[in-house]
Structure formats: C-alpha cells, structure tokens
Amino acid sequence: MTISHLVTHSGGFHADELLSSVILTRLFPQAQILRTRDEAWITPGAGKIIYDVGRAYDPEAAIFDHHQKDAPLRSDGQPYSSFGLVWSHFGRDYLAALAVPEADREAIHAAFDRGFVLPVDLMDNGALDPSVAGPLADLTLPALLETLKPSFDDPAPDADDRAFGEALAVARAFVEASLRRKAAKHRAETKVLEAIRAAGDNPVLELAMGMPFRSAIERAGADHMLFVVHPRGQDWTLTTIRLSDDTFDNRADLPASWAGLTDGALEEASGVPGAKFCHNGRFIAVAQSREAILKMAELAVAEALNPA
Image (cartoon, rainbow, N blue to C red; front, side, top):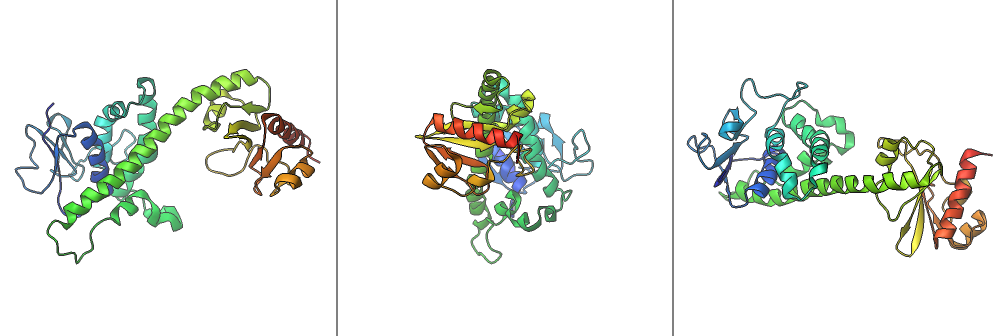
C-alpha cells in the first residue's frame, strides 16, 4: 500500500497518538504526518492512515480511532487506545523493520503489548488511575511525554505541531530502546539455556559475558542454581539470582562478612587472593580472575547451603 499521509488530530497531544506515530513513521517514512480535524482529511480515503481521530475503527479502511461508542476492546474486555490498535495491526511489521529475528517476533510482540502498550491504553482511557504508581506517577512515560506540550500561553500558531515533532523523537527513543532490550533478552536466553545444560547440577552458572539470565533459569527449572559468574572487562563478577522481578530478595545472598569490603580487606575476610569488591547489599562481588571468582562462588554456595 502507498501511504502519503498519516493523519491524527490537531491540538494537544497524548502518548497514544505519539507512540502510534512512532510505529507508522518507521513503516511509512515517506508519509507526511498531518495533524488536523478537517472532516475531509479524517474521512478514510486512498493514501491515508487515520488514527486517534475519525470516530471509527476499520482496519480495511485504515482508520484506527477508539473514542466512538462501541469502541474496540481486547479479548479480555480491556480498552484499546489508538496505540494498541496500531500496534495490533502494524506491530509485527514494525519488529521486522527493526530486524528482530522472525522466530522471536511473536513473543516480543506479545511481551511489548502486555508490558508497554497496554498500560498506555489503560491510562489513555481512564481505566488505570495514575495514582497506582504512587510517588512515581509523574514519571510514567505518558506523564513525561505530556510535559513536552507547549505552555498554555505560547502564542506561536505552530506551537502544538512543533512540540509534537520534538516529542515524537523522545517517544521513538523509548519504544526502540524497549524493543532492543526485549530482543537482546531473547538472544541471551538461548545462550543461558546452553550454559545451564553445560552446568548440570552445579549451583553456579558460568556465562561467557554479562547478559540477562533469570528468565532462562526459571524457564529451565534450574532451581538448584544460586549464583552466576561471568567476565567483565579484565575482572570477573559473581552475582546473585533474584527471586522475581518484583523483589530484590535473592535465592541466596553473598556472605555477610564480605559486605562493603574491597581489596585487601575483602581478601582477608574471604581468604581469596584477588578478591576486589563486594557490594554492601551482598548481591555482587568482583575478583581479578576466573579462578578467584569461582573460589568466591564456592564459598558463597557453602555458606548459603550451610548457614552458621
């Protein structure tokens, strides 16, 4: 399809049409964004994709609004915003445009929809109270994007459109960073699963480099694993495994006697030459060599399994 115009409403903007614009401008870079409420433009026609305006949802006609009576709902009854509708129809093509491997696209599409798109949809429809974020309410992405609107007394006739263009670059950075992170997590999972198979019954998982590992450990059912080691530059690190994304509690902590120590003091406390650092929170330690970090891991496992 040849698209010459991406049409959304004029005036103040919200996260949903900004984020929709991120997706559509990537797929149709030759198209012009037109922000208008002119009836002729917001009526479906050749060469246009219309979103967040027009009072209709008809993918065949390329119109994606959610403000009308009987607006589209997800299969679980939760509302869409224009972002959710655009992501539903164009998200997979967007992932392909970002060179996400085909084998990973469906999983990443679903994960991004669940963790990024849905909260925007709910907030835009008033189905999620910003107060649920507590003191972080003003730091949610929709709230931050709205801070980029022009001030109420900006007299420039193009103030809203200019601010929209500036906000679009910011919105794009967040969308693409989130998706790059998810794609990297999928790549890492393959490597971690291979390392888990190689480790067998060992409670220490050794990786070739730093990478996300907890989801792969859970997927593999490797409940026996307590710590992870990997190189970092010229050093090696020993890290704990969090119980879940919702907590800082770990399967096992590093020894209390190491907490906050560095260099000679840590070498003396641990008995390991080359020990360099242990965070006061006891979730990461650093050593000069693989040999030293594996010895520290061995000691951490022994204390975790046989606490005093």
